[in-house]
Length: 216
Image (cartoon, rainbow, N blue to C red; front, side, top):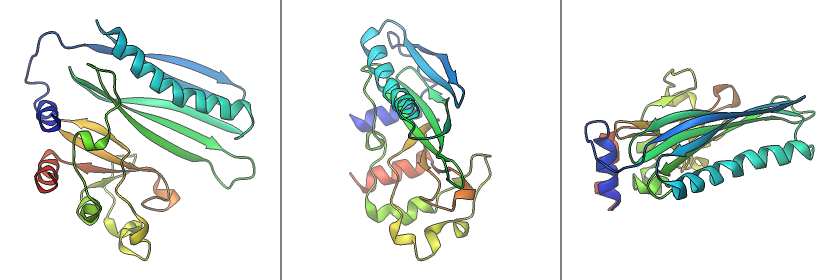
C-alpha cells in the first residue's frame, strides 16, 4: 500500500486519474495588537469528509497559538503558512509559528509540516512514504541541507560533526517537494545554531527508493 502510494506521488503530474478529489487553499487572517496570523482553509471538491478532517487538524495549530497568546504565554507572535505541494491524492503545507517571550534574547520559530490524503483526510506520517531507521542518520545528514533562503549549508556548519552528533535524531517533521522528493524539517538548535534558522534536508526520489528497499 505504501509503495503504491509513493509510486503514485513520484508520477504525479503525468498520470490522470478520474474521480480523485481536487482541492484549493483559501486564506483566513486574524490579528491583534501583538500578533498577526494567516492560516489555510482547504477545500476538497466532492469530498466533505476529507475536507472536514483536514481543516479540523489545521485548526488545532491555530487554536493552540491563539490560546497561548490570550493567556499570556508569549508577548508577541506571528502565524503563517505555505502550500508546498499538491496533486490529485495529497496536499502538503507548512505552518510557521513564531513566538517572542518577554525577557527572551530572541523569538523562536517552529515550522510544522502537515501532509494529508485528499481521499481520506488523514494526516500522513513520514513513514507513509519513506522507511527510515536510526542507523540511517548519517546517510540522511549527508543529503543536501538547505536554509530558508534556499542556500545549501555544509555539514561542517551543523552539529552533525561535533560532540553533539549523538543528540541529533532523524526528524519525522516533513513536507513534500513534488516529483517524489521530501524535505525533513529541523527547527533552530536541533541541527545547528539559532542563527542558521530552520533547516531542510532534502531526500531525493532515488534516496527514498534506497531507504525503502533497505528497510522493508
